[in-house]
Amino acid sequence: MKLFGLTGVAGYIAPRHLQAIHDTGNKLVAAMDPHDSVGILDRYFKEVAFFTEYERFDRHLERLRRDPERDAIDFLSICTPNYLHDAHIRLALRLGANAICEKPLVANPWQLDALEQLEAESPGKVYSILQLRVHPSLIELKKRLEAQKSDKKYDIVLTYITSRGPWYMYSWKGNEDKSGGIATNIGIHFFDMLSWLFGGVQKSEVYLSEKSKMSGFLELENANVRWFLSIDKTDLPEEIKAKGQPTYRSITFDGEEIEFSGGFTDLHTRMYETILDGKGFGIETARPSIELVNGIRQAELSPINYGHPFLMEKVNS
Image: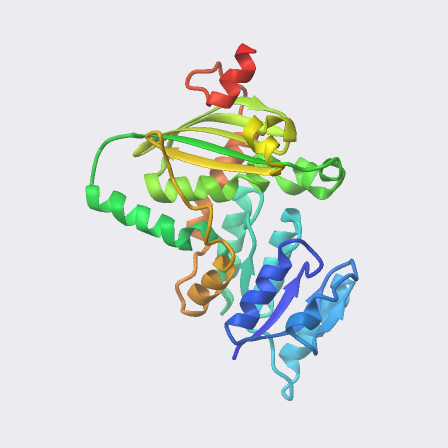
């Protein structure tokens, strides 16, 4: 049984990590969040040392490491806002523990270089949550693509619209310096998935860049990708609005929908099983998508060359 600490336990994504720690037969011994609405801990673990101050959490974990009568943590799960990931990964490595970090691993590519150096000096390893890589339907698609061994560039259309209220822009998520913007905060999993399936980025263009939506084009080794990301509910297709659904996710593959709408409930547990088996996704695996979204964030707008259908509809309306 492995012992875990967890940062950001009051956040949206933390329950999936709590479930994964529990379902893999391990134990959470310490957790931290500046907010104290953390009753969910009792659903999974009854005896967790909880802290609202990072400094006291740090000190507690250090005491566990140095006390011969107590057991140090083996893993630190990081569920905090994006801009804190780097610092909390550093904490894990300083403690000699492994870090399991939510997306994005860090906000800026240069931070990866420093973390690689720290990782080399520590017995701990850094693992990124890239859960779409363990989705059964997508694993089957990757096997199919590899079996075909085609030089063809597939036509991919990625659409992800997830409605968010005014709170989003007032939170850290709406602050690009803290979240990296929507390409990083809501798009990075999809960009990672696409480069995993279709190869590295050869060209990237950005046609639309607003706080609530972005759109552009990627040329990958084996695919041309038109993408559209939004948190604006007015961008939802009419049929989705009519159903009262707040989210629309679609990826088409030469006009055919890639079906992976199900199978999301246990992906974090699958990720933890992979990591505990010594096969997790490390810094170098996470690097390409972090470099890509960093480039998208800083890109100047290009004339629309190969625009997403939703973007063209707006341009022509």
